[in-house]
Image 1: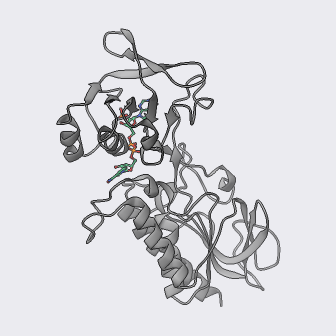
Image 2: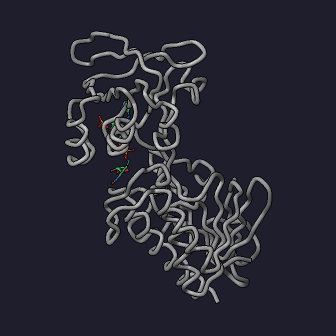
Length: 318
Ligand code: NAP
């Protein structure tokens, strides 16, 4: 029986583990992929308080080592369900404890674990365009991670699709070693930060293709170009590129928890700044929950809030 099981080893989940362990609780973190979440794909973080500049990978590794060093276990297994057993031994998501102590059953793809409290910190995954052959061309020109795959396109022409911070950062990163970078965005205004956009606009090998959407992926075995449609004029043109980096935001993946926690229409876990869900003893943290600002610092902050709330809940049970 763990005190706290945390689902997701991104910045929110690992911060929660640090706070739980420092509060004297035994924490286990479950992760289906690799530690760090989305931040490992960020080349440079420059907006985390007190850290001038750090790569996303180094930041994530520091968090991971800190959590492990404090005693947290990190298990690389995919969590497939979470259910609550009430004080009488019946699986029930909302009944408060009577008699014995309530606990959670966490099932993974390879085992079953128990915990007194659970924190869902599942983050969000890259959104896909939904175009024909998009999935087939992943790794053959289509990528969702410039830091991971950018080096394969050295000296070649590529495109980045999106207008947020990720697209701006990806385009800046790629412009350092690709011959040409097209930035395709469906509007003329960018939602990403101005500083990055100004740096991108100053690059000679970057061309903006605004008010435009990608309508077709060209090429047989691998990507050879994209067809884009101008949303103002309706005009269609082909842009020859070897790579298309899709950076159109993220979507959560919380379907497995839709009975034990309420989800909003976008699939995010409904919770306030207190990180509570509708189920007693079940908390949520980071990008997977409903919130206004999804940043590294708010994910870490959520981790602390959720872990301390979980610790207080456990102390009340005893
Ligand atoms: P985002 O801010 O949600 O931006 C997604 C972009 O993709 C928007 O420009 C959006 O266009 C466009 N888009 C969405 N769906 C589309 C579709 N179907 N077709 C074409 N374009 C589409 O996502 P993000 O850039 O990944 O950033 C996510 C969060 O992480 C944000 O809060 C961001 O600030 C944060 N972040 C921060 C940093 C940093 O601080 N260093 C780095 C990366 C990310 P519209 O603008 O027209 O909606």
